[in-house]
Amino acid sequence: MQKYRGFRLANRLLKILAWVELIFGIIASLIGGMASAKELGGVAALIIIVGILYSVIAWIITLASADIFEWLPDIEEDIRRIASSK
Image (tube, rainbow, N blue to C red; front, top):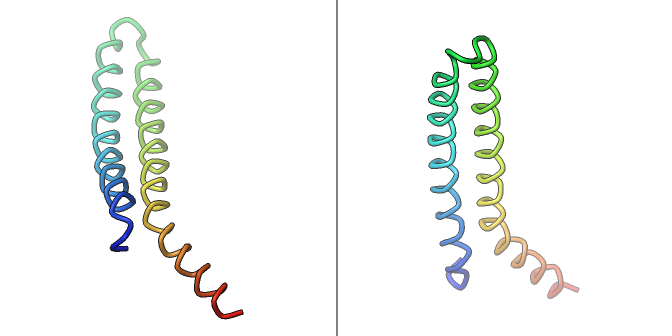
């Protein structure tokens, strides 16, 4: 992976972004739900649950995107090896 420094950088940045996204998403969901608890009552719990669920799904998608940048050099290497063996 020496010649793919950009992929390595993108991988790290996306993993950092994923964790920041998860932490801030959960905090924002909790704050939003608690702030609206007086006005909305039981719907505030739904806001918290949906917000946390959305944050977890976004976290999984961002981590999967980061892993793609880790796999691309390996895929390229495998394709070159297969092509050279024919």
